[in-house]
Length: 56
Image (tube, rainbow, N blue to C red):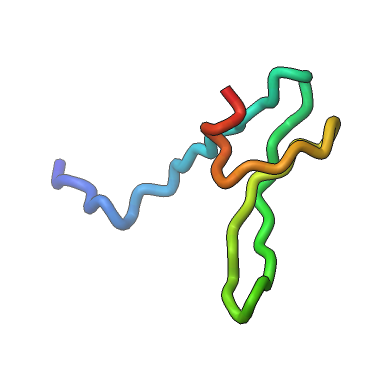
């Protein structure tokens, strides 16, 4: 059997982040001062942070 190349592998996982309030954290892109900024926002409590790991 030949080896399968790394680009042909089809499995992928997504990491889901959760806020301490119990809501799920979603990434959003905002256009501010001529720049695109990515922010993480909790769907339940509407808390906004720079990245999902800041919710811990």
